[in-house]
Image (cartoon, rainbow, N blue to C red; front, side):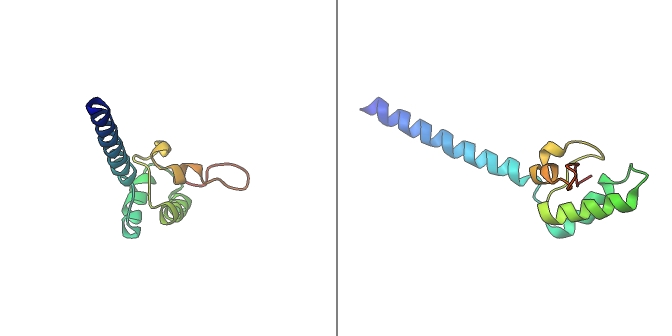
Length: 94
């Protein structure tokens, strides 16, 4: 009976740690709306099409409250940003 209680306690603690860590990782990219402009400015800094990049980046950030790190790629860090598509099925967010 004591081993069963210890196993249950260990399982419960592991679950709590897993939930806590997932919230920390998920919350890493949660921005406030005022943080969108500087993040999008950096995200669009390497493109020659700055106006459309900023337009769509700001729109995506306002909806998703997330902008991937770097100037290209890394969209897997922001599932909402990554999965938002145009009617043609192309990525909406830069």
